[in-house]
Length: 111
Length: 116
Image 1 (cartoon, each protein chain N blue to C red):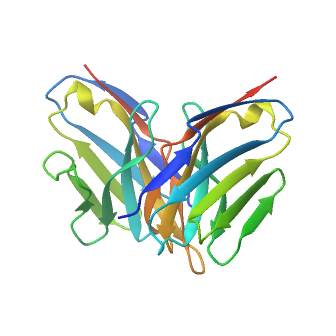
Image 2 (tube, each protein chain N blue to C red; image 1 turned 120 degrees about the horizontal axis):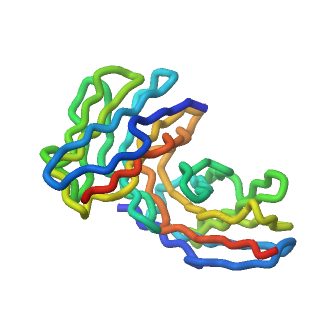
């Protein structure tokens, strides 16, 4: 079955700096990779996703990249703000079936 | 995206009792999922609930402990049976919203369960 690893487990950055979170997956059949943000005490929220037919996708300060050959994908947050502080989960699935989540990254943006 | 609600939002229960968690969606969805999230941990899939068929359980989860109902396309329940303190966790339902090719997954607000 699919296995998703995520690094780092914790990440602290200064406000305004960039943050990068990396995930690797094992199943080459996976073709849909969403990222979720979970603030303390709240539900995971889908923030961005990428399909296997593209290598990069950007939405304002957030971007995701995908390397299908190496089976890894990354979340990039630029110009970080305190409200970006949260736990971020990556996931991998096949056409949106059988989601497997990474262990999460706790991001702290320091003022 | 689908709007998902869960009841109760939190509960404190005694060891040996059972709790039923309800999940309501504002639109018809084929697939609903139940996850467990222990403090500081990732999301672990308990089971997939499809309307009109038995739920499919992941390794480590059994129907006797986590019976699930899916009476229609907008509602599901998860029961945590014969609870022990190890069952203390957040339980989340989620649904897949069908996209053109890919299904996106959205989560309910969660039920925080504490077992004494």
